[in-house]
Image (cartoon, rainbow, N blue to C red; front, side, top):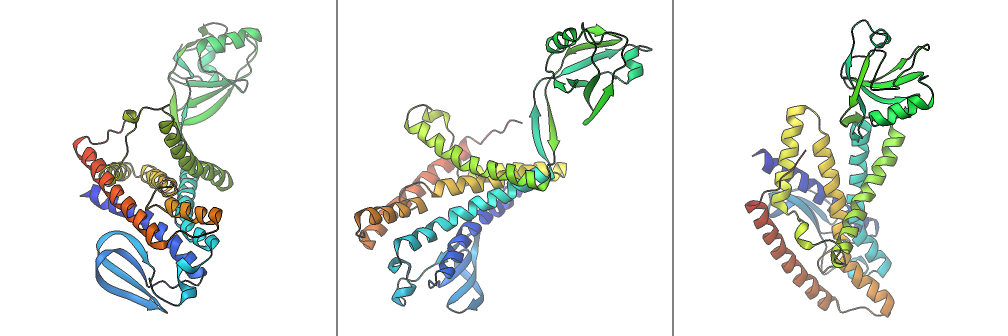
Length: 354
């Protein structure tokens, strides 16, 4: 049940935001909008009405849509507007999805983003009564750096220590999730071999650290992550078309797969009290939706943009009836593809390894 509720909430948010982008631009351009609907028909009731637009709530609690009229005052119909205005209307949905991804990624970076670190040097054992114990070394400490110089292996640490004749002045450690710095006294050689001054070393494993960034840095990193979602998906498709990545290695995800991912992320968030998994998933899906809608395929915003571009290049518009037929065929094919992907999502559930 939790998977279904989480999936409906996540996917509905993405679609509502997408349609809201189209709606806001349509209103800004002075187009007539007959309906802004939450969910899909049949209609339950009208929430309210403002000017020509009805705001409705429908029975199927999934997504939203904007309904434009086929007949109205000529200047208020989208098809009668210049190409640049129609392009703005089509781009608004993907743009708002990209903006949502940016905001959610920024929240993730500001509240705590898990960052994987490379290998470190571990303190295997500290001899009781040794200088190392007196300085503050403890068993299982991770040595991240010495003299502000990062180290990732015992060999790297020993080579550096010998290059300064053992006169290492400081060691930066990770202990129980905290970073601490120890000042090392002079008068003896530190780390010139695997055991020195009572500190026995070994190669340690990497670790994951949750870092909360200040808002300006979080915004910069969130912006980069959002654009990375879009560019990564588009570049992946290019590599597939070029034959660089075998198709059988790529696993598309449909509504059922999204439900599985959202359910697991929600379960993990509820168990840990940390909402990062669900926020990151929603942001990633929002960026992916923006990229997918920009693809020049019939039925997608990108496909409609392609017709606008062809009109600009030809200086003559393609028949709206022919264009509508192309998009209808595209939508039918897309629905068939979604059914096929959903079948694989059910028979071969997505495995997430953490």
